[in-house]
Image (tube, rainbow, N blue to C red; front, side):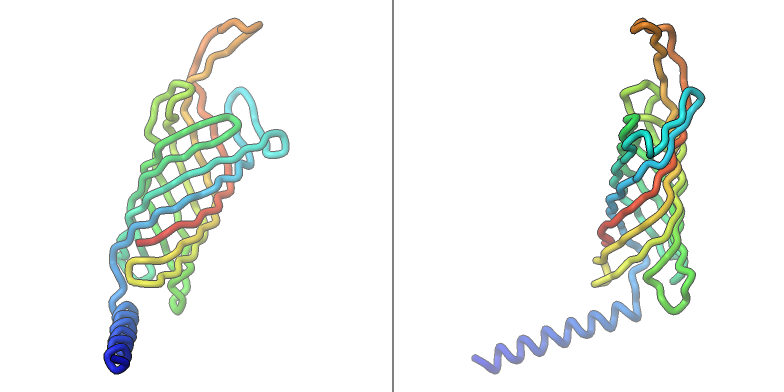
Length: 195
């Protein structure tokens, strides 16, 4: 009985060791990342006003699902979708974006620089999902524990444009409505899972 258990444990350890060795020799070419980001708002401006972090508590949350293909060991590209919510003033958007990861250190492939460029799907009406361009750029670090499981963390800059319709009120009476473009600058802190 004890011999069977020892044989089972030895076989299991051998298979795990071979899997780790195979992972080093044959890394996965395709990954899916699920990330959460907190966007610390720094400034938002449009033709009517400018909001600063010192005057308003500007924050935001986002969840992104990204599909990455490793073109070269140091270069990855892909596409993603997500949902982003911002506070003060409130905006919600569904971004669709392209992404590029580049690993500048030849010996260490865990750290990388990244950029996302895309567009938020939505309507221009206030209170609905806002449309507009987005740009993210920053640094990240991925630690893979298995071929298709790892942890990811990112720090970067988030630039977001919101195309919204706003109504102007004078003495609590609506005077008119028109479209404005809000531009929001944020720092982004994120972490997630890589499959």
